[in-house]
Amino acid sequence: MGFFMAEPILTVIGFDADDTLWQNEFFFRQTEDRYLDLLADFGDRSVLAAHLLAIEKRNVSIYGFGIKGFTLSMVEMALEVSDGRIDASIIAEILAMGREMLSHPVELLPDVRATLEALAWRLPLVLVTKGDLFDQERKLAQSGLTDLFRAVEIVSEKSASTYARVFSTMGKGPETGLMVGNSLRSDILPALDAGAFAIHIPHDLTWAYEHVDEPVGHPRLFVVERISAVVEIIEKLVESGPGFTL
Image 1 (cartoon, helix red, strand yellow):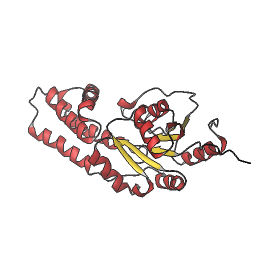
Image 2 (cartoon, rainbow, N blue to C red):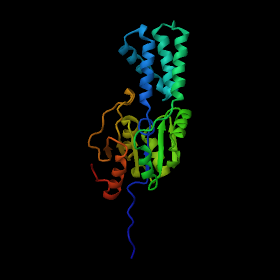
Image 3 (cartoon, one colour):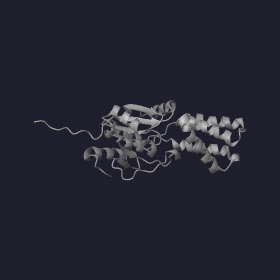
Image 4 (cartoon, rainbow, N blue to C red):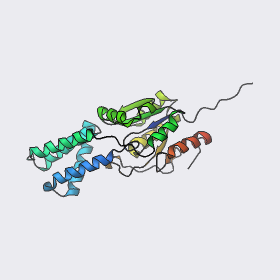
């Protein structure tokens, strides 16, 4: 007599990197504060900050995400607000800020390694991150987490098709994939649109570009305050099935 083997609920877990595994936006905010101090003679601080954000959003499609695009946007705004008369020493200082960010040590968020170690033995883990290739590779190498990931995907943008491809390659399709991240716009909504599960871990600091409304009540979405809670959710999801709720 034969027996039925149930299909697994999960076959692969994806993790975002910046502000999910290690600090990132904090350093952007620090640099932006220093930058606005530099340009204090050219306008009100809040107006300058809004102008910089508008330039960053405009440039994302050209430079992509990351420190290099941010640095170029700062240079561009300095030239705009000064009508091209900005002192060369200020441009040099802006470039130095960018180099400093690109060499800043990686600071893991609490409980990250323990959480990944608790999951890596039972399911394939894949890092799905967007941004500058060299910088993301540098941060991953310095994080000491490389050995815990079965694969690494550094992409220019995260979309439903990104997650469908990754979860089909590393698992049995997006329906059995789960994405963990801090950004609703990049990590959560496109993963849900692909048919995957998602765990949202809000970060105290999130770039304004990433702000969108949370899909309240979505049956495949879980929201937690800390990464260590991911282990319990996955265990209960595997035990109880997709109907499990917090």
